Image (cartoon, rainbow, N blue to C red; front, side, top):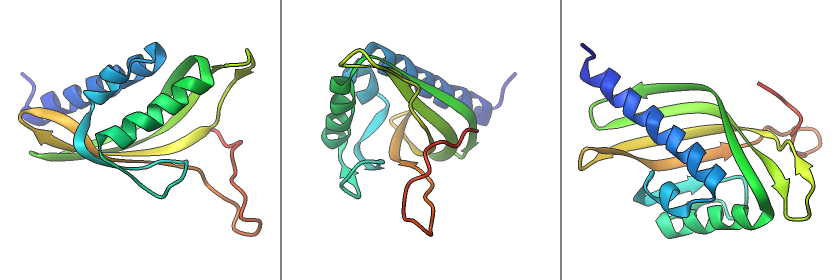
Length: 146
C-alpha cells in the first residue's frame, strides 16, 4: 500500500500531465485548475514576474495565439514532496505549428515548480522557466538539449 508521500507525488504528476494535455488542447480552464490563485510566475518573457492567476492565464492565452497546434514535452521531472509543500524541476519544451503554418521544434527550458496543498489539492504557487545564457555575449543559449 502506498504511503501518503507516494500518493501526493502521484497526484502532482497527474497535475503536470493534465497541464500538458491542457496545453495541447489550448484549454485555459484546464491550466487554471493547476495554479494557486496567488501564483507568482517567473516566465521567460517580460516582465520579471507575473503575479496572480489572471496574469498567468494571460501568458498562456498569448502562447495559444501564436500557435495553430501546440504541445509541451516534459523530461526528467524530479519531485520532492512534503506534507503541505512540494517542489520539482524538469526540462520543458513548447513546440508545434505557428499561426503562419511554420512548424517549430521549440527550445528546451529549465522549469521549476513549487506546489502548495490547498484544501487537499496540490496547486502551483510558483513556477519559473529559464534559458541559460552566454556570460561573455549576454545572449541566450537556446540550442541545448537534455
